Length: 242
Image (tube, rainbow, N blue to C red; front, top):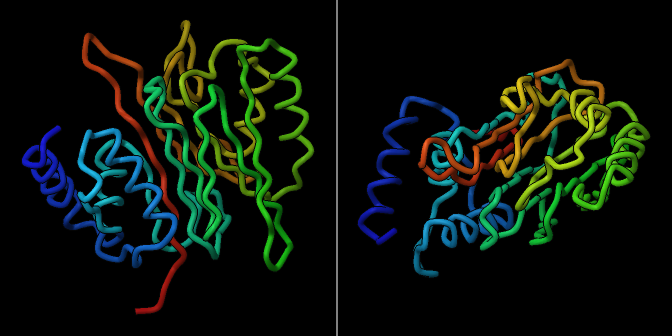
């Protein structure tokens, strides 16, 4: 995409959510927004000096099917965060890896699979734990994924992102573990609804113990009737005083 095309995309994004207060209330630039900006630059083929404002990133996330919260609430889960959270999934596009940001901690990885960050509740400054699960290795990976997620206490924030693919060997038990973090099932795969499909871009922010379908999630197919899919992202910004 050239500079003119990128400008048009951003203008469309801004107009599409111009009446949406969250875009206007996006915070100042920080490590989270800087990391997301680099992902969008690469995905859109833009020069390194092309800049995105935090408002641009919120608009792009929303326009491409992502979820954005500017009051600290994680979707409709009933759980809140006091630090910025962001997640990016490129799907099958191998040029970029996933990005997971929690406050000033930014995790990036290009390895195939589902990347997970867990943030344990009840600590003043909790340190996230990061995992990478390559389900292509077999169902043992699915069992380990299920074990770790089931051991997380209620209220644990879970952030999920896929790079390349994570559907192969993703078992019903693994799917149920995502549901326990409130992750919705909105994709159609092999005749039934699932959280994401083969080679999909997929990312989500949820919390253990949240009601089903209340978490923030976004997905895009690898392609649809010859049209390629696109990256997806979700963002949570803590509520701030005017």
